Length: 180
Ligand SMILES: *[C@@H]1O[C@H](CO)[C@@H](O)[C@H](O)[C@H]1NC(C)=O
Ligand SMILES: *[C@@H]1O[C@H](CO)[C@@H](O)[C@H](O)[C@H]1NC(C)=O
Ligand SMILES: *[C@@H]1O[C@H](CO)[C@@H](O)[C@H](O)[C@H]1NC(C)=O
Image 1 (cartoon, rainbow, N blue to C red):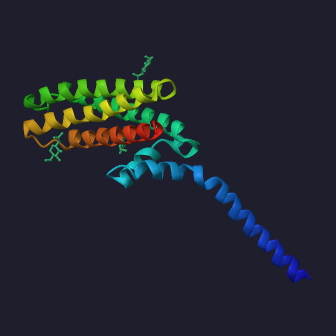
Image 2 (image 1 turned 60 degrees about the vertical axis):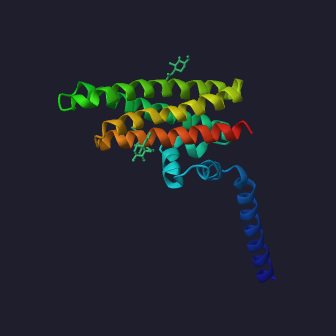
Image 3 (image 1 turned 120 degrees about the horizontal axis):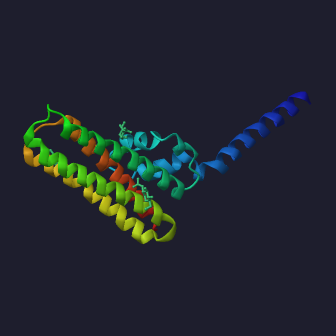
C-alpha cells in the first residue's frame, strides 16, 4: 500500500511538473526571443543582443519585448554615436575619416529618432511603426557604405556598424511580426 501511495505521489509530481511547464511554455521569454531571432541572419548574436537587457527575460508578450528591444537599440546606437563624436575630436583620427564620421553621426542620430517613433507607434499605429522600423534598418546602411568608400579599415567603426545592423533587423522583424 505504501508503495502504491508513493507511486501515486510520484506520478502526481511528474504530472504537475509537466503541466506547469506546458502551461508556461507557449509564451515563455525564451520562446519569444527564439521566435524573433530565428528570423534574423545571426541567431546567436541576436539572442545575446536581446539578453544584454535584463528586462528581456521578464517580457510576457511580443509587444513588451519589442519595447525592450527598441530601448536597448536606442541606448546602443546613442553609445555608438557618442563614440563617433569622440573620434571626430581626437587628434589621432585620420582627416580622411572625418566625412565618414559626420555621416555616421547624422545617420545614427536619425536612426535613434526612428527607433523612438517606432516605440511610440507600437500602441497607436503598428503600420507606421513597421515603416519606421524598416527605415531605421535601411538607415543602418549609410555609415557602413560611407566607411567602405574610404577604403580605410577601422575595426572600431565596423563593429558599431554591425551592432546597428543587428538591432535594425531585430527591431524590424519584431515590429513586422506584431503587425501580423
Ligand atoms: C551594443 O550591442 C552589441 C551587440 O549586442 C554589444 O556587443 C555591445 O556591448 C553593446 N554596447 C553597449 C554600449 O551596450
Ligand atoms: C523620444 O521622443 C520623445 C517624444 O518626442 C522625446 O521626449 C524623447 O526625448 C525621445 N527620446 C530619444 C532617445 O530620442
Ligand atoms: C562594406 O564592405 C563589406 C566588406 O566588403 C561588406 O560586407 C558590406 O556589406 C559593405 N557595407 C555596405 C553598407 O555596403
